Amino acid sequence: RHKFWETQPVGQFKEIGNTSLPEGPIEAPTPLSEVKQEPYNLPNLYEWVTCDINSEEVCDEIYNLLANNYVEDDENMFRFNYSKEFLRWALQPPGYFKSWHIGVRVKSSKKMVAFISGIPARIRVRDEVVNMAEINFLCVHKKLRTKRLAPVMIKEVTRRVHLENIWQATYTAGVVLPTPIATCQYWHRSLNPKKLIDVGFSRLGARMTMSRTIKLYKLPESTVTQGFRKMKILDVPAVTRLIRNYLSQFVVAPDFDEHDVEHWLLPKENVVDSYLVESPETHEVTDFCSFYTLPSSILGNQNYSTLKAAYSFYNVSTKTPLLQLMNDALIVAKQRDYDVFNALDVMHNETFLKELKFGPGDGKLHYYLYNYRIRHALNPSELGLVLL
Ligand code: YNC
Ligand code: MG
Image (cartoon, rainbow, N blue to C red; front, side):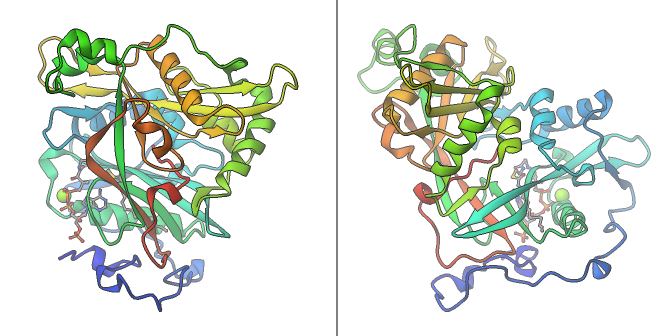
C-alpha cells in the first residue's frame, strides 16, 4: 500500500493496537561516519541545490514554486500563498541549517521544480525533550507529480538531518500516511462573511440572509480586556516563562527558550502577531495570544485574488478567560482586515471554538513523528504543537 513509507522508521498501520511496543526511538542512531556522504540520485535531468533563502532571487524562486504548486483545498478553489517574508521567518529560526533548505532544479534551464525544508526544534514527548527536525514545504511542480520524486526528497532531507546528528522529525500533512500521532481539524471564524461567501469559501446558512449573516459575525470595534497590548521585545522573558509553564501540560509540545520565543512570537509585520495581558495593578504578564498570517490565492474568481487568513498559533490564559482572550484576538484580526481566523482543535481550543462562532472545516490535518513511536494516538487536546 505504501511502498515508500513501509520502508521507513515510522509507526506502521499493522502495529496499531499492539501496546507491547515500547515508546521512543524506533531505530538507534548510527555513527556519523556511516551516514551516506553523497546526495541521493535524482533522475538525470535534475540536480540538487542548497538554497540561500537570503538571496532575493532564490527566495523568489521558492516563493513562486510554492505559490503555483503548493497545497490546495480538496475542491482546488484556494492555494496557500506563503509570503517571502514568512518563508524567511519560517526557515531561519535559531540554529537553523542552510543545508536543510533543499531545492531541485532542471539542469538545462535551472528552473526550480521541487523543494523540501527542515528546521531544528526541541520537541518534548511526555517527559523527554528530543532534538528534532520539523519538515515542511515539501512541493513538487504539478507537471512532475506521481514520478516518485517525493520519496527521494524525503530521503535526502533525512540524510542531511542525520549529518547534524539529529534522528527524529515531526511534520503535518493533509494526507493519511503511516501513522498519525493525532488527527486534528481546522475551524474557521468568518470576519468578512460577504467576501467569504462571494468567493465560495463559505455558504449562506439555511434560512439565513446576507444581512443576518453579517450581523451574526459582527465584532466590537475595540478589544475589551484591560491591559491587552502588543508584545514587545522586553516581554520575552515573561512570555517565555508563561508559555513554558503552559505547554508543560501537553503530551507533545515544543521546548521553547527565550531565543525561540523572540524568533517565533515577537510580532513581525504581516507574518506573526502577538498580544498579551499586562495586569494594570501588578504589571505581571498573565495571558498571551498569537496568530500567523497565511493568505490563500483564490483560484479563478473575477472579483478577488487573495483571502487574508490569520491562523491561531500559541495562546495562554491564566487570568483572562480563554474565550475573552480569543474574542480580543478576533477583534484585532478584524481591525487589521483579515477575512477569516482559523484554528485547529489542539491545546484548549475546543473550549472556545463553538462559542466564538467558528465552524468546522472539511479536511483534516494529521500530525506525525519520524523514528519515534508513541503507544497510541493522541487526542488533539493533548497536542501543544502548531506547525506552519
Ligand atoms: C506528504 N505530504 O504517500 P507511499 S506536507 C509525506 N508527506 O509514498 P510521488 C507524502 N509523504 O505511500 P507526488 C506526502 N504526499 O507509496 C505524498 N507522500 O509510501 C508520499 N503536492 O511520491 C506518498 N505538499 O513523488 C507516496 O508523489 C509517495 O508527485 C509518492 O509528490 C508528493 O510539507 C507531493 O501537499 C506532496 O507537491 C510532493 O503531491 C506533491 O504527488 C505536492 O510519486 C502539493 O510520497 C503540496 C503538498 C505537502 C505538504 C509537508 C510535510 C512533508 C513531510 C515529509 C516527510 C518527512 C519525514 C521526516 C524526514 C526527516 C527525518 C529525520 C531524521
Ligand atoms: Mg513525483
